Image 1: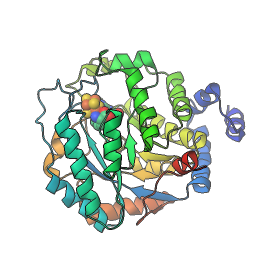
Image 2: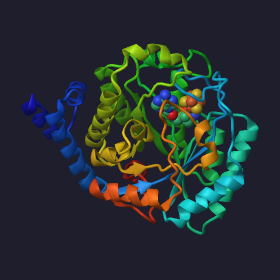
Image 3: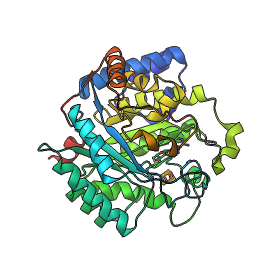
Image 4: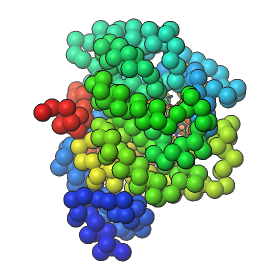
Length: 362
Ligand code: SAM
Ligand code: SF4
């Protein structure tokens, strides 16, 4: 099998069967895959990791995804929304440390009050600095007019995870209704690209009944949709969600972790110049999980800069790390680990995905 992996890694174009074989590699073969991914990362995007300060703006959500701890139907959650002043304070923290970029993530809302609020907040964020602040939004599916308004107000990147590219599996993990529509989820990616955003997607890895074929299809989906950025992480169960009833068919947590690293590495091999985030959910399984992701081809880390008093309430899954990123000690340690993984931190740079440049410039 080792020979087989070596010959796949020499190929220019990988097909579905190749991807399945890579994802099924044993530990010694996996090292070859990581090595190849690291080499491609170094040659195509450089040995830099970019920090994006993550603000978990609100856990108020109109949706009911079966896997998510802050779904509307979970009545145990205490709902919160971070104020504009608090957001500006933590953005200032990120700018003072020369990170250059932030991510605003939230439960999904499409009402006028929310749309106006985000627009106003984006303008205030850009007014904080004479240099453009890189702002990624992760606020779910919206109308095209909303994407346009938020882009105009200062956002440049947008993340909408498709969660899985298998329609049947999508409807096993979401209700089948107008709010949770597979076609609309995919359409959002097209709309965002058309609007001019650097566009990202991603999937959860280790979902109940997910196969290697599904994961290979997820990678091919990202290629087909020509995405610029990817954030994918292990699925981690939450006991107050409907998907928890499938707990006994899940892969062991360690296998979900290892499979996520393989997905990162294989995506780097497949899409050489995209930005890949080393997800927080990796850290929930292994405290050094995100640094492992960097070693396998990822180049973005999102330290959580949400004010600490809100951390407990943004509880998406079991064991979500309640790390206080607002300490220089924590960041220093993170930087040390990034250096050990062979990267430098890309301070003072936006770290935009090169793929976007090549996709949009003639
Ligand atoms: N509401 C927006 C959306 O769904 O696009 C953004 C926020 S949502 C909390 C961000 C991501 O969290 C989702 O795309 C999903 O992949 C991830 N997530 C939610 N529950 C999870 C779980 N139990 N395990 C792993 N990831 C989870
Ligand atoms: Fe809401 Fe996003 Fe969670 Fe779905 S994944 S319930 S849209 S916060």
